[in-house]
Length: 481
Ligand SMILES: [Zn+2]
Image (cartoon, rainbow, N blue to C red):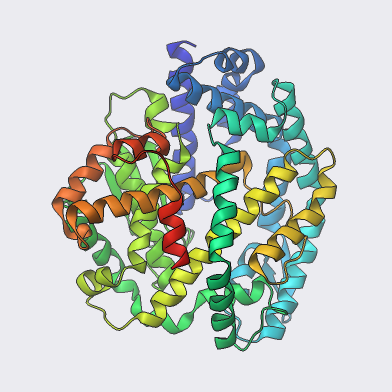
């Protein structure tokens, strides 16, 4: 592997990120990715990838994962584009109007009438079904390419390259599922009852409505969004206004993405935090989460090798993002930063949401193990519905058996991040107290960790915080209490 490759790879990511920033912030109405592939496509060609896969050192492993991942992506880019365009262009007929397929989930979550929610849900599912043949072909190709690179399966390729320790992770998730079973049952009944439903006939449309929870919107006003972020960061000694490299984009533009996002274009010199403030708990959660990513990338040492600045363990940056958005489960944060009290009902719902998400991802990981080793992908369809129904206890259709799967076993990255985030948060509480988020020492500790980019996987970071190893016990205890 030579400097040219790494330089080209870094430029490639910067150009792709810049396109996503320009498009997502509404500064440009198209996303032009293919011309970038034309210039940099050679970095994902077979000889380059084969050479990368021979590297054994940590830095080399990250580069190899990037190259192999890019090789798989490149082989399905036409199908990816076809599926993406289909989801962007599809519409669903709803109450005499054609609404965008992608917007339907928002309409479902805001629909108080259960019958109407279900009706729209089934119309969406009919569209999803039409896209399944292309998704199936795409997944088959990805599986084939992983084997072609010499791995036993797609699952084994990512498990090995990303060092996910899947067997260990699945074992810990089995224990999490067992120990949270009773509380999950009780809380699900409680929350469904509040919207007049029972789990025997509830579907994901109903839980989407449940978690939308408009009754709490007044706790999260749009005009306090940016101020609360700045106040949170300044509590840790970080002055967002004086950070030249972390650029807050709050301008209003017609085509701007409604959801906050972070675009690390040049790490650490050009990081965008893009927001279109509209208020509500989702908006607050998104801004805190994305600010976690932005501060992490914005503090990376500029002279680190590219592999440590941009590649590495996905769970690292996600942990910092979760640490920030978890402040919304902390009544002390509400009291100190928002000057809001008496929010027990909100906290109960948001903590249940975390339990729901953790169990959902545990279910997804169990399913993906079957999917990514199956000789007949179509046959895994049944497993999807069975596993998710058993773990989430509501009626889940099998139609999303491919659309509910992220590439490269990203689900495992989220689970590893949830595990490490609790360990990191406990560490901050032990050293800096319950109000750690108002403590400059806590901020300094985080900045020290951020400097390393994603050089160390969360397993090593746990060790550096004086834990013996990455341990799911704190997460399980928090969710089971
Ligand atoms: Zn994230």
